[in-house]
Length: 108
Image (cartoon, rainbow, N blue to C red):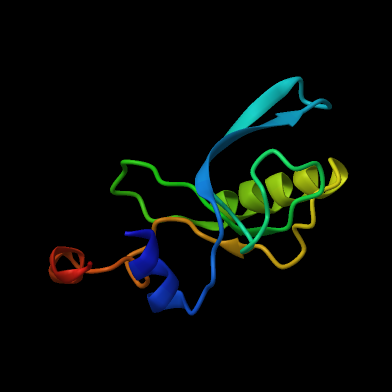
């Protein structure tokens, strides 16, 4: 599915996974899924370039401004931790870029 997302959005992604991002000021952690590194970046590298930050939730509610604000906050936290996240794209599960079921069936 990641390959389909890359083609649909014109992205080139490295390692893809999930992460918990520490938020020391709020004394909490933010779960991010998916989080994709730029090509060639190593997972758990202290200054990795982040290509995509997203949130995949099982909900019928469309993503709104609060969801985008949350992702922007997480992007800032990643930058504060030394990661290069300025060019990270919003990778939230949205219908306009998710592959169709037919595309998923025919994907290699």
